Image (cartoon, rainbow, N blue to C red; front, side, top):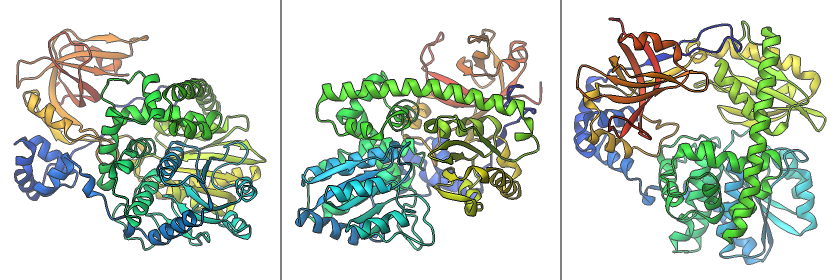
Length: 590
């Protein structure tokens, strides 16, 4: 049971446990692929639930190969893009690499700039300022390009809706190659080439590339067209792809899994100097860096540059060639992140207070739309995410910037918030994004009508199960099944992320060994030592924010638990693993 603090909500929210027993066909597949899983049926079951159906697919899942990357020329317009880039380099034209100010945009710019720098020097990069220029391609940047005799702009992680701006650039004799992964409109910009796996009619096999991933495919095609055989030059940049894939929350399946897998290996062995400085500042040196570390430690620091100051500083860091210089730049960005955390905490608290004082904002509503013109533009996306996690409703947080209300929308699992915002497009000046995250701009006077229509759309399209937490269970097991073989095999499922989440297990009728205790500043967590009837082993576990269950557990009454398996940090009984409890229920026999 997931309880929302009374100060934040007027109801108790129960987490739905979703477990579907395998069909006979799936059981046959488990048997077929279990040899590739060391004979472990539990791991084979997990793979089958992830769509793996042959021993060959299981092998590729465990050890993704660079050779599994798709032919980049399968992407529409790729040949046009490569031809225009080759023409620019042949004519010694000045080229500008342009990108969004978030992690995906800055890593994409760094990747393309670093790779092309190996072969061409008449090149520079440009990141717009969030507060003066805003999201996407700005007229200021086009004027700058014209003044500096730029003839070709490669734009990354934005641009798919910049029809007017690219028309303006065309008047000034500047060509654009757009590398984007956001949802396009019906009318497209008049660019020389548009590389976007979400283009209408595209049959590119991986439709969910990150913006940096699209940039990587462009460079891969450039290398192929020019017979550049030093594959390590390009593959050494996959650490940037891994960071973008993790930070932009794209599915880690298919081609993304290949890039994330090899990018993480690079991140753990020989990362670029800028990332190395961030790793050092995060205290991750000599540790096994995971996708989770990128999401919660590395990504936010890179993002903080664009949120608090300028995304240009993030690219400066990522393309740095001097370790001391990179560390000094990294320290500045680390400070931006500390400032961002303080601001994030303050604005989240203000947002919660606003909702507390105006309960009608959430009461009987399927969505949240709030506005405060004094909030910092750089962190409203984070606040929208916090509200979505807290209330389990799609949330839009708006502030005031450059004469307009500007905001970020975040969604709950399974609900397409892009469609919800799109349904109000006549009220908007600009918008763009993905299924789960959208940025938007509108006139202040349109906020009330936007709030009404957005709620109307959400209420009529969202499913009841999307308004409460869902927990997908991969396998129901007993403690006797938690063998070293299983734990070692689970490590082979990395990297985890959307489309391949860390496996969630369920064990029923579990008891306290007698040593569990409340921990935490306010005794809100439970540190557990648990046993079941399948084995004499006692397993360590931690249950965050689940203190209400303590009396029942301490009375030695049985519980059912859902959990992930983590390496143990401190253990009193020699166990090398710890169960991270995701949810608790009272057993039916209790």
